[in-house]
Each structure stands twice: as C-alpha cells, then as structure tokens.
Picture 1: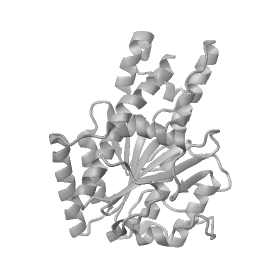
Picture 2: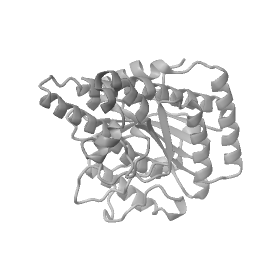
Picture 3: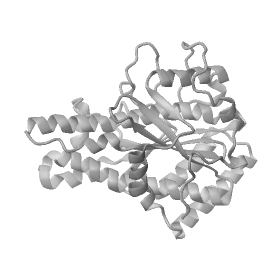
Amino acid sequence: MERMRSFSEPLPAEYCNPTLLKHDSLRLHGDLNQEYPPSCPSDKTGDGDSDVNYRNHLSLTKIQMDVATELPSEIQEYIDKKVYSKLKKRDAQLERVHNQMWDDSKNCELDSRGEDDWRGVLSKAIGAFKGEMISISNDRDWRTDLQPADYQFKLNDPRPDISVGLCACPIEEALKPGMGSAATGLLTRLQADAELISGPYPSCLNLHFPFLIAQTKSGATGGNLFQAQNQAAVGGCVALRILRNLSEYHARISVSNNVPDQCDQLMSIPVFSITTEGPTIELWAHFQEENGSSFKMVRLNVWCMSLKNHCLEALIHISAILKWGSADLKGTIIEAFSS
C-alpha cells in the first residue's frame, strides 16, 4: 500500500477547501472573550472571526494545531509500527462497509444533507469495525474538569460527535489473574473515588480511555472544517490527559509498592481525531510534547468520501486505528495496571 502523503507535498486541487485557506493563520487578533459553542448545529455557531479568535484561545492554552509540519520522529515511528502495520487488506467485510459508506456519502452530498446525516455515515462505518473490545458513543458532553487549567481563557466543554474508547470488561478480565476479584469493576471504582479518571463522561458509561474522536460538519448547513478542527483540538487534548492520568496513577502505585515506574510510554502515545465537512474527511494525530507542557495536533491525511478510492483509503486507516486501540493500546493500559 502506498505510504501516506508527506506534509511537505502539495495537496491535490480536489482536496483544497476555501475555508481552510481563508483561516490558515493561527494567530489573528480579535475579541478573545467571544465564546464558541461546543458541538452544536452550525447555524448556532459564531461567525468566522469568532472561530479564528477561538483558535487563538487554543494556542494560548497550550493546544497547538500544526497544519504544515511533520510529526516528531518518535511519534511517526510509533504510528508506523503500531498503527499503520495494521492497515487492512481488502476483504469481504471491508468491501461491504466501503460500498455502503460510499453510497451514503454520495447521497448525502447530492441531497445537501446536514451534520447529523454525515455523522451517521461515519458512525455506521466505525461501528462495523469496532469489535467487542471497543465502545462508541455519539454526541454526549464530556467532563469539564479534564481541560488544561487556564483561568484567563475559558475553553468550551468537549462534546465529540463520535467518541471511541475501550470497554471496561476486557481490561478487567485481563487483570483478574493478578488481582483476583478486585479487578471486577476496577475502573468504575477508581473513577468514583477520583483516583483515576479513565472515562470522559460525567455519568458512568462503558467507554474508557478514548483514542479516536470525530467532529462532523456540513457546508450545506453552514459548518466548516475550521470549526470541526477547533472542537477536535480540545477533545484530543482531553483524551491525552486521560492517558496522562493513568501514567500518574501508575507512578503513585509504583511508589507505594516500592517498585520501579516503568510506564513512561503512556506519555508518548498519540490519539486520533477525524474532522469532516460534508464529504471531506481529515485524519489528525494528537500528542503531548516530551515534557508534557503542551498538546499538539498534526494532520495526517485528507480524503473525499464521495470519491470511491478515497472512501476506501479513509476506511482502511480508520480500521487500523480501531485495531490498534483494541490491541496495542489496550495491552499498554493493562500493563500499567499490572506492573
């Protein structure tokens, strides 16, 4: 399979989006007190200037979006070895999901449908590949206490259109040989006691350690990629902070048990997001700076879902991320509890 496009290469003309070109600068000035609503219908969002101002908020709270740079070598190596190694070959399941997603995308574009319809197209495709290890939730508010603390600027609460994480049961079952009955309900107890926040929701839902989120927009109803990127930046940051919570929990347990802390790798694991505007779909990687001082977001690729080959490539990469989450990421999380 052809390797993914380098960020230094120009994008084909069919990928270009006038909204992205208009708002390429990340440091325009304006009213920094203007608030931007969370994932909501596009006719209720702010105008272009307030979207740009909100992008400035992100930068000032140490959430940085790099649209024209390459990943750090260690993050690129991790993705190449752990995620891209799982790129799916064409099989009957992939062909079936691909044909459905392609047909749905063409119909949505022809009928100028809104955000809910595009979210449905993507959610259906992700659900077809999720397996028993993975949990999916749509359009729910995340916790408000996991954002970076900055008292000068208020970020909007994350509400991904699609959230993908791990189910508790496979993690707890894997821990039973070492922990016995204490493994049952472990994640729920730790969250209730505020020892480890592994779930992004205020209420108890069976979705932990989110590793893929999606923000969907429709140009037909006034939404755009710029808005979706702003929202995904905050959601990706919170997902990374949940992994950091696990790293810090592991460090505390290691000290109390007088054993070496061997789980630094959690701080260097990326998470992923998808942003869409109509048929245009972007894939992003989110990661922490080495010292944990800031969060970055780099675009990996962009496709058009109503083009048959593009739709296939997007699905192949989404499937690989789901496989990574249910295998390598889950294994790293289990190791953090076991060691």
